[in-house]
Length: 171
Image (cartoon, rainbow, N blue to C red; front, side):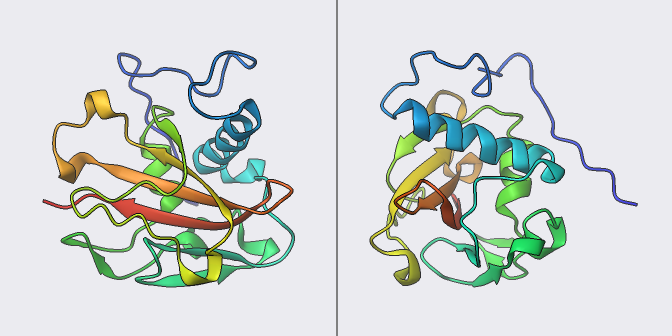
C-alpha cells in the first residue's frame, strides 16, 4: 500500500481552496474552481477532477514527452509518471506530485506560463487552440529558477480538462 500525503506549509499557505466566492485576481471564478478541483485531485486522487470524457494528454512542456490517460487512469498516480530526464533532473516526473507538494500554495494565471529561465510558453501541438490555465509557484516565494514549477491545464469549451503539462525551472 502506498500512503500519499500533501505537505502543507502553514506559514506560506494562502488557501486557494477556500473560501469560495472571493476575489481571485486576474482569472475568472470558474477558472479558480477548476484549479481548486485539480489541486484536490493532486492531493487526493480518489476525489476525481473535471476531465473531459475520453483520453487526457499528460506531458512535459510542449510535448518533450507525453502519454494519454484514459478515464480509468485519472486517479492512478503511477499512470501520471513520465520517466525521462528533464530540467537537469532525473524522472519520473508527475504534475500531480508537483502540485501536491505545493501544499495548495500556487498562483493562477491565464494562458501557458513560460518556463523559467527559457520562457517556453508554447502549447503542445495536440492541444494548440485550447484555452490554457496555469498553476505556478508563487513569485514571492521563488528566489531561483530551480524552485519554479508550473502545471498548465488545457480546457475545452465546457471547461473540461483535455490536457495537463508540467513545467519545471532549471538552473
